[in-house]
Image 1 (spheres, one colour):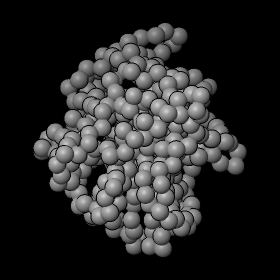
Image 2 (cartoon, one colour):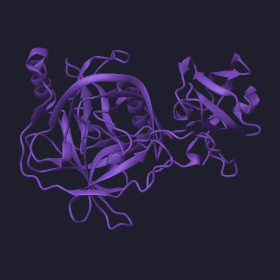
Image 3 (cartoon, one colour):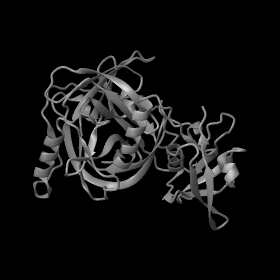
Length: 383
């Protein structure tokens, strides 16, 4: 299943236990939105727990029979930009593709379907890493084409849930990305993707940016700096773009929240922010050219604050680690890294993971009623 284990925190040493001191809370699952088809064609929802007590995350199955469907534009109000949304859908139609993969695993294999965004005219395509994970074959179909094209995986970063694939092509219509820092809460956004793997064109839905810099936990680690939106995002949308009314990509759709019997989670979707996407694209290109990607390592164990306050509690410090050398102690509360507030342990894990070995980071700590700042020079994480 996809439950996050203690060693996924910033303590990769197997002999260092990471104590879980999380208090009881209302729980919801976070669902990766690739459509996964088993041998019998059912769509299987792959759940990713935000709370480590959520288990049995891969057994929700429903069978969907569909036929050819046109582009669907939903949640668009004529008085608030219906025509703009239609223009956005038209502009992006040839830059958004459906991705199908053949997956061979212990369960007998199957097929996963997601969405991708065209990066270059000669065939570079961006999607989610979980869309192409464990794929033995990847094919891509473009709008207006009846036959899929073979694709190869150039590079994949499970930690940031982004992957770069390539088809042989010329003259493709390239998507335009928004400038980093341009997204604001309340902006109207449009989600485009092949929801439920429906035949025909992509599904287009609209909403607003509900929040910025969200952090969620997944089996591969933590995803941070996410855009939260109420635009409808469904299975099959993974890897598709979230765009503004200029038709610029502001995020890559990756997950939605699902409530349980005790808590509701309506219209909560998550997209990887363009601020992160543009950085990771270059890292993926370097990786495709043979560069080895190394993550930063601090050397601490973490727990959430029981009082619901900001930050994460240090539960242990590995001797000789960057944290130890910086003077960080057990029971310190980490509030910020390089001036960016830390919202829970997942936020700290992601902030350190995204830094590079040799980088010096400023870590703001709350200790004995005082705010203190320490500088730690990160080392490379080892498996």
